[in-house]
Length: 186
Ligand code: ZN
Image 1 (tube, rainbow, N blue to C red):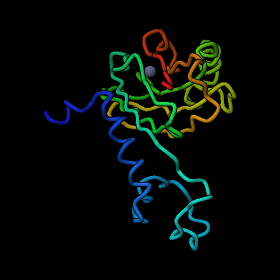
Image 2 (image 1 turned 90 degrees about the horizontal axis):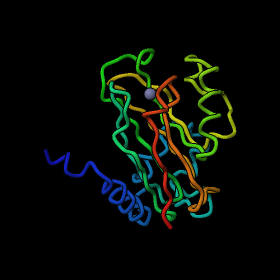
Image 3 (image 1 turned 90 degrees about the vertical axis):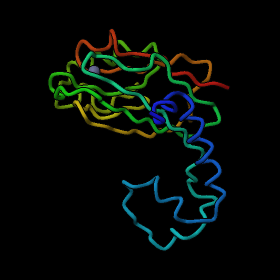
């Protein structure tokens, strides 16, 4: 029950704050939770406080659910312009398999949405209904089925607060219901 209470927009703010403050802590352990998929090439430099290197910056987390009714649970996602990176977690709370009711989360300029969806349909399920290397795609998750979760992390660099962005699912026929506004607040 208590979990439900904080499942709204407050999460993004809370996480942001926590991550921002943990950057100042001198525990190297704090860095663990982020880069999990990274091959550790230079193990020597991990215990150095990263100052000039690609500092993770301020990471803001967003969560969105999708279901067997072909719906996202949010029509709008908002991030502050001070977020340097965004981590989006997509959860499919339904039961249907990917081939029947697959969902992904794709971000583009609003003006590119229709073309990206059309190209994705042609690309087929084997490509997650997305044209590989489509330059119009700002961020995308993998396509998931019921009970699955997926995460994408991307940079806000180059995105403008005054631009209009949309997120949507590219599974054929889903975009009509499964779309929303992605808003950057100055
Ligand atoms: Zn979908």
